[in-house]
Image (cartoon, rainbow, N blue to C red):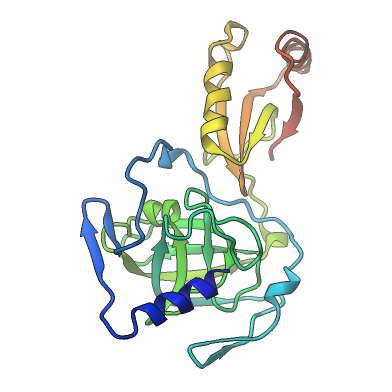
Length: 265
């Protein structure tokens, strides 16, 4: 869990000042930061889509860090606060979060000290008014006046990588009230064909490239859309049901793909 890493980090640095690296990739702790080579197109990664999820039972209990006791919220209720956001990168990439999930710095996630886990929040950079929606699945941050830790890609979208932290507003989202299904920032009620869903962005892009080379799909757009923690390869929208079924059958018979019909509204 990330809390354990934070405790170890503080103990190791208790007799010396924390060193901050600052280069053209941003400001971050000396042993953290982004990877040297990033093959992922960060701009293609979409906001998390809020949905109703059960609260992780392991994150409901009160806990203490640095002699400070925290009592987690166990219900989705109106909540809004202002403070500083920071981000965490490769030091925690691949490690378990407080929910037991694996932290991926290239997904729209984050950490909060008391909000329910998992839950969804809108984070707005109060300097440039940019906003993102992330899924909270971790506890933290526990340093200074920071109220939320963002994944690398979420921080990138808010333009706080270079500075390292920024003043933000965090607002808890009630998924039951969240009506908008977002696909490339547009609302659709047409049908799509889903030909794959991946945890790994690179694997999803590999399939996307293969699908884009099929001449039978020249009239349709193929998208790589992140929904929660998965990257979905979608073809469409396809308004004609006859054409939709024909393409679905061809993809399944000729290319041995498992294809699902998905509707976004």
